[in-house]
Length: 429
Ligand code: PA5
Image 1 (cartoon, rainbow, N blue to C red):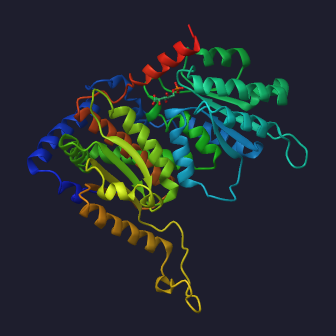
Image 2 (image 1 turned 135 degrees about the vertical axis):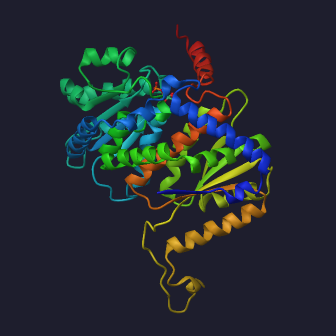
């Protein structure tokens, strides 16, 4: 379950501004529901929760089990919406150490030659017992032509063909559009396994399609529970979305007041990558036509020692969204030590969860005093079901908030500009 508390943020806006924003956000939600807003042909992320495809979930779960049993390394090759969702869920729900199953590596998400060169050499190097590593790759690209992904895939494919000869194709899984694009040509020619990204689901809204679900299943996470967590959030908010509409309204009123940055801060390091997914979802959806609040991510308390000073006393144009987990995710406690040489016995008996909670409450007090509007989001616990809910929660919030600004949330015309300039410099036709 997710609870929202906007009390502190509301202190920074007038009742009139809030009421005006609330009306806009209510209209925006109706536009989403009725498919009457801009880009309504991209609302498949809602439809797929309306009528879940259990056969597809089973097929992906079974593929995940199969790869977990056979792979030493699983490479997720994609960029932007084609990998951030999977990484967010995997990092939120996997152990930090002693992970079971294949090592999950990411590629195709930048042009760093050193990284790729080292990755190629790593997969080529035999295991300690001298046998070759068993490598699988999932290349994910809706367009099938994104340069970062396509180029990395070419380099990795070459090594895999060297390692496994004609059997390489069995280890390559492609997630792409139903038809068209260079990747589809390659799939036909080489006979790779293929999963389809629905035409009406854009990259940053695609984590609950094979785009995110295959890597998440390979990581050993129960994708059915995750997916149905999102379904339950969908059903809940179709029934009554008041709390999320109100949240969007507070955020919109802050936007109108001149807030330009939203620092999404989590107090559990496991959620940092989830912040990366939120950053892309919201940033690429709202940052258009000179509008939007720039989303950024902080992991507290780590970043209280890097960004904390700015948040407390720097330029006053930012807000914060705190994401906390109520149920302890560890039972680690502080013991009393004889002699108390480090003077920490005053914490004896406290769990790290309790200490972290005090850090959050203290930070809230301090940042509020520093005139930072704060929204508090609280997750009942950290598990696949709640993360599924959280995915739909942020997708819906994004749709409502961005529509309320009069902007199309589902395109990204600005991203094309860097691509055009890069391709011109690289001499592409
Ligand atoms: O949200 C989006 O649409 C983008 O971030 C894309 O996911 C990203 O650019 C990757 O595109 P593609 O899947 O076509 O390689």
